[in-house]
Structures are given as structure tokens and as C-alpha cells.
Length: 359
Image (cartoon, rainbow, N blue to C red; front, side):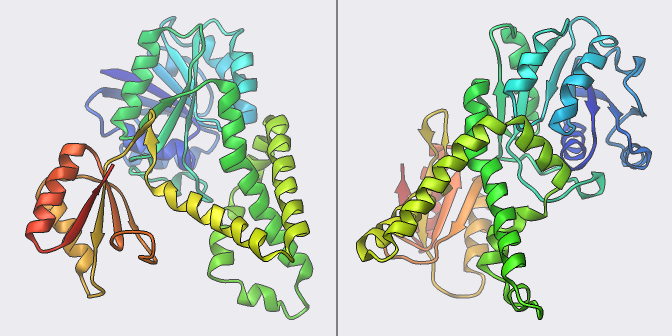
């Protein structure tokens, strides 16, 4: 069993301890945070066994310590930890940028392994944390040449304990990828909101009518501004590279807006690529999928999920398709294994559903 330490129990850190405390492999969890009320609440909730406002000897028996703070503080906390944790203790983080942090970690006398759970939310604070946050989400591990294989395996083991999916990539690739799929999208969401704010009239007509699609694509603009100021500064070079590509795409669109075929290709290409997101690849392997034809009647989807659950078939992802033009069926279900896919196909067919096995 492992003794766990964590610094920062906001939304992400709080969710992490709530998930870890359920594991039979976890013996104790000591937490550090500047917010005493959050620490007291986590202790009363039974998700941590001890707490402190500062990094001190309470971390001396930890086997691994997670730093879940804004990225600009991670390196300083790592330096504080190396003075108190035992020689074999692993220090890791949950920050969404890696290159700068890993460069700084080379000076540490304790082993540091970069980590980044791919969890997106506009929430903040321990009170918003939830134990199911990591289930079926990617958890990136950015190991270096100095990391021991057994240390990486320990971190992977704990990632699997919180039901996340460990993915190992190098730091440079990580920062470029996250700039593309996370950091710049946050910039775009904030820019769209600021655009409407500047274009709106005195009666706030745009604000009143902003619903549906606009609210969906700008939801993340409600995220913690301090956190995103930190992220953009830390990952400035990669964010600028991706922004330049986005600007080029928008300039092309501006030039082609009068051309019917080009504009159609623009939207058609994005639609096809976006529609493929549901079936993600794990280590290069496409996940097993069922497409199910569903009649428009009350309880149809509930019936399907109940049938799968009753037959011990785990659903990793589910999507209701908005049209059937290029797809068989109106429900797309991703399951855990190909054996479960085949079993799901059989039981659903027996229940009268039209089903197709994918991948």
C-alpha cells in the first residue's frame, strides 16, 4: 500500500484524492493547501488522513506526491518537497504544460515525473470536485531518460486505480498537442465572448439571445482566469505557433467566403473530422464500437444501456447521432473489449435491435 501526498486540493486535486481514497492500494493521503476550509472539509469527508498549510515533515513517509497547483507554482513546490520527502519518493504534477517544469526538475535530488490528466472544466475549488472525474479520461505521463521504469509503472498503476487511461509522450510533443486542443481553444472561447461583448448594443440583445451553440463553444471561457494566464505564459511559444495556424485558416476562409465549393469543403472537412472523435485510439488501437438503430420512442436508449449492463458489458463512451445519412443506426456505443463488443452484438440482436459491429 502507498502513502500519498498532494499539494493543492481544488477541483482537480480534490477530485484526485476522492478517487485515490477508494483504492485498496492507498494507505494514507496527506494534503497541503492554502485554503484551510478546503483542508478541513476534505478531512471531514474522509478523503485525506492528515493536512497542513505548508510543505513540512508530514510528507516524509510519502511514496508519491502529486502537485496540483497552477503551473507557475509547481517547480517551487517540487523544490520544497525534495527537502522533506524520503529518497525513494516520486514527485509528480498535474499541470497542463510540461517543458519548463521538466527542465527545472533536472536540478532536483528527488525523482520527478511529469503528469497531466486531460480534464477540462470551468469549475474551481474543492467543493466542485468529484470522484468520478478521471474515469475513461486520458492521463498523460511525460517521462524522461532519468525516470526509472519502476517509478513510471507506479504512477501508471495509480492512474489505472482512478480508472483513467495512461498515455506516455515526450514533453515537447505534449506542450504542442495541448496548445492545439486545449490552450488555444480556451483563447478562442474567451475571444468570442469578448467579441460579442464589444459588438453588443446597450440593450444587450446579443447577450440575451446567446444560447445553444454559442453557449456550448464558449463554456470554457468561464474557467479560472488566473489559471489560464499562467498556462498561456508558461506555454507561450507553442500557443503562438498554433495561433498562427488558426489565423492562417481564418484568413483563407475570409478570402474564400464567396466561393461556394471552398466554403462547403471547409465545413465538410471539419464535420467529418469532428464526427470521428467519438472513437478514440488508445496506443494506436481503435476502440471497439457498436452502432445501434434506435426508434424514436421513450426509453429506447435506457433499455439498451440496461441490456448491456445486465450482461456485464461496460460502456466507455456513448453518442446519440443527430442524423443517419452516413452512419448505420442512431446510437454509437464504445465498449471496453472486442469480446464485450461481440457479446453486446449478440444480446442486442436477440432483443430485436438492428446492430452493426465496428472495428
